[in-house]
Image (cartoon, rainbow over all chains, first blue to last red; front, side, top):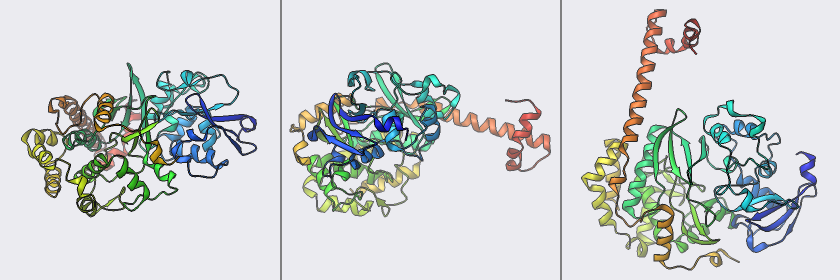
Amino acid sequence: MNTMFQKIEYCLKYKNDIVFKFNIEQRTITMVNQGLLPISLQNKPINFGLVQKFCSDRILMLNRGYCKEILTACGIEDQSDINICIMCRALSFRDNYWISRTNKKETWEHVNLYENNFSLDISHIALTGNMQRATIDNEIGDKIFTGELTGKGTRAKCYYRTGKKVIMIKNETKPEILSEVITYYIAQALGVACSKYEIRNMFGKECSVCEILTCEERELIPCRDILSYYNTNQMSYKGDYYSFFMSIDPINFMRMQILDYITLNTDRNRDNFGILAYNGKMLGLYPLFDHDSCFKGKSTNGNYFPTGITFGKTLELLKTKYCQYYNTIPIPRFKEIVYSGSFKDIFLKCKSVEEYDGMIKRVNNL
Amino acid sequence: MGLEGLKLQVSNEERDSIIENMLGKKFDGNVDFADFNESEIINATKRENAKNEIVDYIVGRIKEEYQLWDDGEALLKWDEYKQKHNLK
């Protein structure tokens, strides 16, 4: 790491409040406000490991599409997790945490991605890998920000501002995009909040487009962070994390699992669902998102990530162990909608007859 | 403080109202079919068909020019064909 960075004192902040200060050279941290620690860092020894964990959980994955191009465009040579976080201030479209130099007079109002411009050139590179727009002027710094270094997932994607809205554009195959599109309507019928996706051609690529729903008041705490709180990586219906989701928002958590059963969603991983925090407090299940892997499962015997058992066994679990909640979900009404001609019409504009028939068989099992 | 202490104590109605404000619609089991944007899907299909037709056309031209039978072989000749015809 650049020795200049090592000597400087940084701090992790929540908006304008310092959570802790840290020094990279001395590998020390000084806790300032433990009550503001991110969920993922709670329940752990207070040492420099917190900085490392925060940064490595935060940054983009190295197998993400065009990762190298993004880092190059941002002018990042030292690609250690901590350095990447420092360079982009750890700003994200997920929550209100960020990293700043302790003695720097910049405020959350000056840097946050919701109210300030972020580099559209870097966004373009993140989606297309086309480096024509990469210049020294685009390198991130005191005036140029980006959220591209703190997103999860392996697909090429980017954030873009249109009017007052921020959208996420993700390059996917047409069947994947249409899975995103139709799953929103299935979620509506089930009564579980879900992001709306549309299919668009952006910069010559077929993409799904959805609105970013986070803002200063509304933050996403991914399941990954809840697992970290319980010091585990494993998702299991027997785990503390599962009990926690069942305690905070049982009905919507069950609806998510039913939706994934019906659609055989093979990718409800720990970054693909979470908790919605509202003004810093946990409200319930975050509206569902990322449904490109719906209809990819081969059968109900496939493994379902959140429970660690098959889709079929997950449904049985919900019907038996959690029957007091399951019985409150209006399944007959849901079936009525899914069996309707109007629903079938829009489904078949997105997916095949075979996929419709397979889905109906699973709906019959509810 | 445990996770339990970080829960927001609100009624279901208040929570639904926050979600409604966030997504601009209620998720109460009713489906808004009118909201379905079919034209973008039709356009995507048109783009896909056009791309396939362009590829078929070019493969046909290459096969004709190099007297090839196999589409795979024709695709391998693409760079050579581009150079020969000064295509970008």
